[in-house]
Image 1 (cartoon, helix red, strand yellow):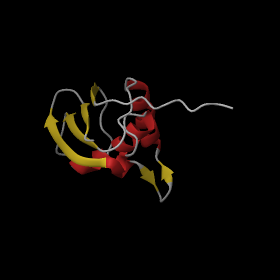
Image 2 (cartoon, rainbow, N blue to C red):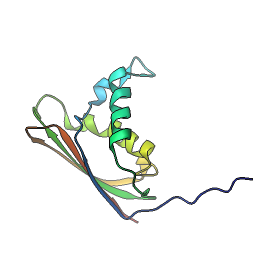
Image 3 (cartoon, rainbow, N blue to C red):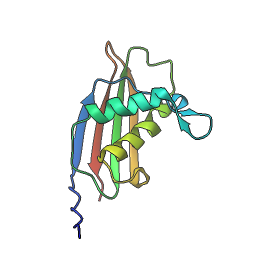
Length: 121
């Protein structure tokens, strides 16, 4: 019989990735199918994000999106796809446990995403 490994827990995570954020408008094709853009974005982030311990329970999160042209897309459209990937990567246990969100976009020479997650338990 296999024993379940306990989840590693963290109090804070801070990471930056040189990846252009993907808008939720480019995530779904029709009603149920993830787009090729989203699948590529997810694959790139899962590969690029370093392994971290999981924050369990309630958490606070801060996103900073550095963009060459920050006025082309709505800020809120970047958040949901990224949260889903953070769950899949194991940074957070469940995005429903987010109790505080801060997000901003900044004009920059290079596209990247800064992510700060804090345990709120």
